[in-house]
Image 1: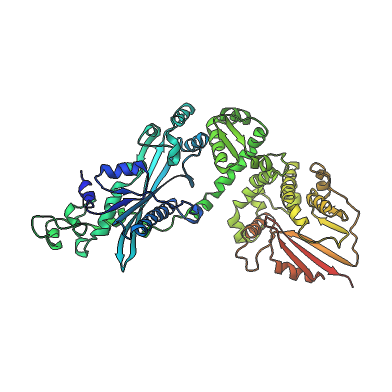
Image 2 (image 1 turned 30 degrees about the horizontal axis):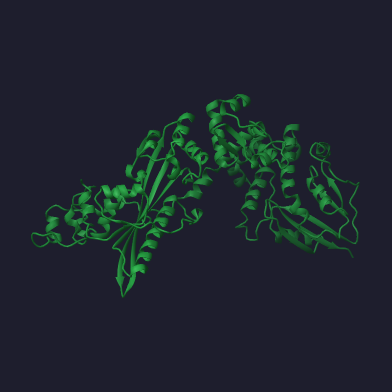
Length: 573
């Protein structure tokens, strides 16, 4: 065997495998390595979100496993092994890390996500060399990772459940074992097969060579090859073989035993040679696809169809929404991945979040906001570049004509667009109304005026929280006319009465003063530019504006949602 001599040089070393995995033990034993098994007690509770990549998490976990064993063995008998090997495997599909399934339903969920798709199997390995210096343990850690891409065939329901009922998925990350029955699910493997089984043996051996016999500068220009060097390059690992003095480095170089460190460095993907994987950047780049998928599901009324209903199959849903089965199934699977649908053997059903926010008649429905975003905002943001260059809204590009009055010419141009806009305002207002109504002490006011109050959602909440308050909603006549379709508009009066003092409650999305950190407000300011040519302001900008009109006492409340609130008070003479 090509790898046997490499492993054989460790025969006189005390090697410990910090893993109870029978698959890792089998791989290393078959290669001829002699080792002890001391399972690590390190609790795998690292925050996955703090790592830019799955392999970064796997390497750090492997290192902590190995260090825990090394320190524990030294503390036990004041001696440590020569080497401790730690490993951790991570399987990911998209950005989702697949752990070991907790039950059969969880196994079904995992395997369904893998069906017909390619996923990544990444093993992080840490090699801890232990040395004693001044009666203290000194460790040197070398770590690397190996990634293999595995593609599953399209799996039928019968095949999935037959495999799950075999019991094999239950103790394996990702819910399958490629070396056993799980192999029948796999269509192709790109990379190290043993890495998928549990340990990247080839990369491990190459790493040993780098650790114990690094190349000389004069060897870098010699013959290139990708194989593992011969046994005699490991003179630092053990005593000199019998039969004469060890050859010098120059003798070996002249004998043709040369290595190309550059090629090795390119082949060994270590954390030092690769930049962090730009996960968040890629999410931002692809974010519009996620939005459009959600918009499409709402436009097809998928969540309305599944509300308070038993799970339904993709074919049945496709028939009801007049769409293809294959396209509907992919859309449903993605919505399940987003957490808005539950996928089971019986079919698809809404999650609680979908019933609350995505159905058109839900108590906290954002369906109108989603439809407005899909049919109006989406088209406007297509022309964001022009909005930035010109500094004005882009309705003329979308509509094909100049909009003199954005409300009348665009938002209210038809009953349908008016209803979308009102549903948008109603959904967002209702979500934030309770926080706004309780943000300040309004007991000193007897009346309030909600200008542009649309459906009266905020007015109703103000009255509910402050029974003494009389609220008047002002808006366009056609808006007031449709407000009854949402909820009672609340107490209204012909005009607003002010006593000795008056207060102005502003509900806006506030920028931070330096316009650097308030991401929601900064995006909304772009949105205002594209849609109506307006902008958002910071609390300081509002305060200066209000002071010009006699409102000198200004309070600010950041509500933690989309909107913020300001209470400005003007004291009469």
